[in-house]
Length: 519
Ligand code: BLA
Image (tube, rainbow, N blue to C red; front, side, top):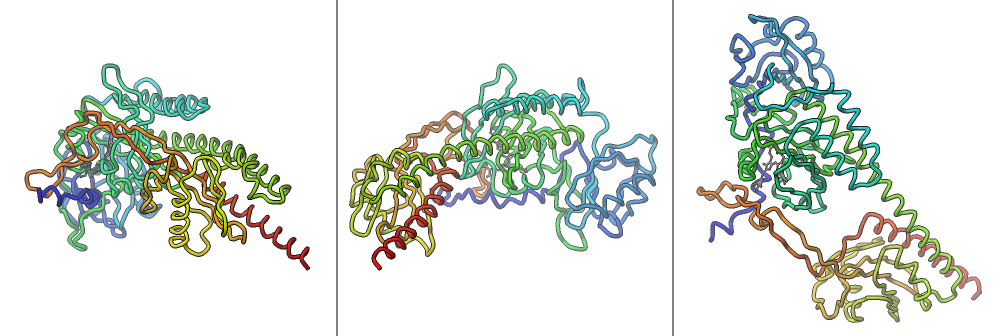
């Protein structure tokens, strides 16, 4: 049991997946030192592409023909971090067939990756029926027609499945705590649906999520394929392994390979959806037979990730905007009433119908020096007192708002009896003589979450007790969350801040007025 308690899922976060030291066997890799463009690393399978096994120090221009060398040299001196697809030719070879390749510059190296000319068995042809631009146009047209988020989720997964031929395409969205949910799915007939299932944050560890912002397409052609080592494993000059962050064929973490095997998946691909430089979600694809992705297919998927991300953020933004407009109406009505009424805080019930709509609350406590007025569903007066005391201790100078969706977690010693139905609190601080805080409360929201497998068993220790293995079972597992409210949203937060500034302004105008009358 001691061993069990020492297991720590942060171990997963430490696996340096960008230094995998190997590529998947359907591709080969060469890395050249920037500047003199001499070879530093090659994958051990390079002889499938070239006639000679190049040694460390071999100049680029002895390996490829003049045009290819000119092209690669341009890339070497061009933009960093951009993966450029190209066709190149070997300098010496029995055929002068061109090789599909991709090249990029990263961390002082020009990395050139070569792909097999013939698509490997089992790969469905993306370009079989329609040309790439036509495929993308068709997908784009369908996404353009979606007027709400659920339609958009469905359209994204349908279109990517249609384009790529994967057996299952899912739209996976990260929550604030980095666990994720399948919110859209298109799946081949005869396979169970994963739509609506939740997966723990540890399934996609931190360093992977970070890498996926940088490199937006991962393809795992065959979970049973043996990775091909990169030789030498460390650069002799710098004693460091090659950084494969932007590689197309990077070998995948053995832990993740095991995960996919446990799920019964043979090949996978995921495309990042990056919104505002943050990993919003993934388009996660599974295939039940081997399916290496060709470089052109990869490029198409990258574009689809960008397109999907743009439509998603535009749709989310427009929903947020309409919500803002709706809430502002109530906000302005509250301010109007506030200006008309002489003693606002004694007439809170008159403004309550509008006030509650501003932040979607079930109750409010107006906390003044001498008196606290409550309306709607609020905790006991002792509980309110405790909350205010702790807020005043915790909050820093200049704090305008504070929030929690779980009062029991955020504030110590509050019993359920004292809290009543109130579970969430959004506090607006007012620096006014007659009011110090507006505390908005939200009722409990009991949510049931269906996990794919017991999230507590995200990983199990393996025989050596050190390496973790992903869970073996993805059997559905339900958890029910009590004593929490719905989370406060971006718009709730914005409205709370507006309330703060709007009310502060009015209160100070009033104070000035009073002062003038008294003089
Ligand atoms: C990577 N985990 C991933 C990836 C996905 C998932 C999508 C990206 C690679 C890919 O495209 O396949 C998880 N896949 C999912 C989920 C679904 C899915 C949630 O289809 C839902 C339907 N994984 C574990 C544990 C560890 C772990 C316990 O379960 C660590 C101990 C690690 N996952 C892990 C690592 C990677 C990963 C290291 C990075 C793989 C790589 O890029 O090399």
